Image: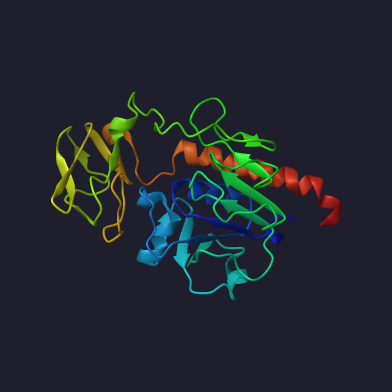
Length: 267
C-alpha cells in the first residue's frame, strides 16, 4: 500500500511542494524538511513558508510546522503536510526521499539514504547518486523519470515564460538583507523599484506580476535569486501550484509507482 510508505521531501520550495501535492493526492504520507530561513521565492505555493508562518494552505493541502516527528502518524490520513526545520535525515528508516533543494549537485544525498531516492534536476547521476532523477527543465521532457544518467545540464538561463527568460528574474545586487516595497501579486512596470539590498535598488527587468519574493531577513549573497516577475501579468494566479511543479510531481509519483510495482512482492 502506498499509504504505508513515508516520503521525506528535502526542500519545500515550489517544486518540492508540487511533489508533495501530487503524492498526497495519491494517498502517500509526506513530510517536508527545510532550512530555518527558507530560500523559497514563490512563497505562496511553498510548504517551507510554514516554517515562518506556522501554517500555509496551498490548494487542498496544508503545511503545518511541527517541532518533532514523534507524532508523524497523526498526519498520515489527513491533508496536512508536516514541515520541520532540519538539514539532516531522521534517525529512523524512510521509504522514499526526494531531494527537491535544487542545489544542482548531490550535496549530502546518497543512493542508500532510503529504499528509493529521487532527485530533481541537474547534477545528479541516476543509478549512482540516487535511484532516479526527474527532469525539471521546461520542454518536451519536463517531468521525465531518468533511471540511468543525468537530467539536462543547467544552462544558467531560466525557462522561457511569456517570451522572456533572464529578464523576469530578480537577483540580489549585493550581499546583505532585502527590503521589499512591493509584494507578491503586485503588478509592476519595467524599471520600477521594487526593493533594495543595502544602498542598491532592485529594479523590475520587465513589466508583469510579481510571482515570487524571498523572505525579508534571509542573508543574501550577490547574484542570488530573490524573486521573479511573470510577464503574463494579471492572468497569473499566484496561489496556484505551477504546471511545471505539477509535472515534476507527476514524475516523482511515476518513479514511486514503478518502485512499488517492482518491489510489491516484498511489501
